[in-house]
Image (cartoon, rainbow, N blue to C red; front, top):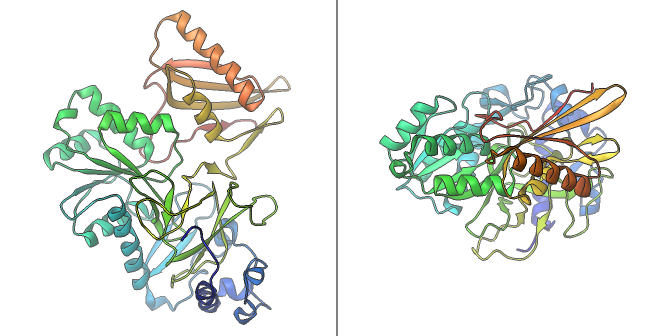
Length: 414
């Protein structure tokens, strides 16, 4: 399978998912005047309205439920900290299907029942921790359900239990890697693989984590609205993430027009669930930016691939007419020797002007070298993005690390 194709079989699954979704109040209203029986081609499907996160907020608390309340066995909520939360109900089958997908992710990374899986993502309403655990248990691996924080205990348990797999956000994986190096205990760590999810990360950060921990790294993809992490996974060939298309159908659209992008172009990922019972979603806009990876993967998996997420269509900021995505900053900093993967951007409006300050970490300590690096970064930023920043070099480890997702851009203009 080279790419996600709309086959007759998938079309029938989509129609069935629509019928089921319309048992709930949310899609009963959203698809008023639309019959699943009228969707008989990809053209018909692409006329259906998108679903967005704001729509899901309006359904709070359980307006998304497409099953009777007695069939709901669990709820999860998206990890955002502002506004009305999104509540996603799960049936017993949803929970089991999610574990099946997650175990498949582990298998794709070559993880087996003999591994010891050290799980640092959070538990509770957030989908992460419990998903990593359920997949490990279904696989038969030993789950070490640490959750986030308490780095002292994390490292002690990692050493004492001889954990072989680390599951974490890239930010926390970096924090642990730096702390293990600082303590000089790398030789006491048995990690072989890292399963990293929940945020976009650049190549320089990836290399640092892999080298400092001595592990193979794998990208895992997912979002609370569509089960959680575990709906897509990279393999050892590091050429995109395989998407589990027996459970979902995806499209890649132009975020401005809503139309399908041409083959090979980047766009926004849109997902339709094919088997979800508690809260099926039709044409859900993830706002994650990616593109299709053509051809069949060398690993032999017959699942299409998307490229590693490069950013979000809603994390773009505009300064002095220049459009800035965090992924573009990752790329340009990766070109400068002596500059770390970690940075923060502060945008302020002072004396009638927008001011962009770019803080970046470096191992350089000589004042002259720091000034040279700042000038190099400023020039490259102007060349690649279109405006001059005020670049500020800081010591390695000076910028904050996070146990969850890192915030890279702080827009203080509003």
